Image 1 (spheres, rainbow, N blue to C red):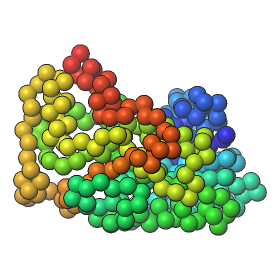
Image 2 (image 1 turned 30 degrees about the horizontal axis):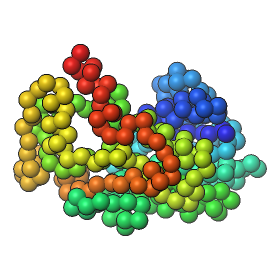
Image 3 (image 1 turned 180 degrees about the vertical axis):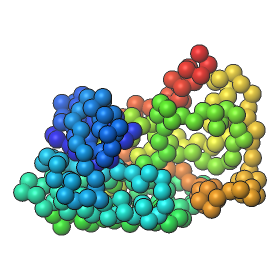
Length: 295
């Protein structure tokens, strides 16, 4: 199987490594020299292209599957729309109109599309209620990922990621030092975020479907901070309620909306499909980070 990873960042690099290790051919696609170097350092083919520039996509060879994981670089809703909606349409059309189009697409989305559920459980059947302009764009992109590929004779899958963490992105100090604001954390280690997409492609699962990619145990932030500090041999960090944090005059509107979107994400579907997690919970996922910190 040959797979093009459009927007080959943290998760894409790991996905490429896993695909290559399992005997597949991965092609990482980035715009920058630094991004291309990271792909080559990871041990697979790098191609320069931009999902918003259809002509540049011609540099990518024919593939069996495309994984769309491009980023808008943390910018606002309009920049997100240019990449996630317009760029996704451009990529689907560019590949779909080839003489040998791919068999499927996987679009990587975010659990931010759910909005607030007051701490209740959500799954793939839960109606979406995006709370910000940017998450509204992500919900629109999900519709494009499912509805547009069939116009070209192939099928799309949405992999809806929870909060990602990995080496270099553990953010330990935030929880060890505090103050820690209450609420649920829904997380997945980068290796499992990549592994789940690899699994869905290899096993040919979830065509025209959405799959939540999150580990086994959503955790209360206060409980998570207490566990981390206990493991590190430190005192429990200071804590604050959501109301305390909302009273902060310097809080941005985007941060305010994030504080008001509490939910617990279920991975029952991914588990039922047969995926086995490398890091089933934060306890396994943060072990190396804690050993490095205490060492």
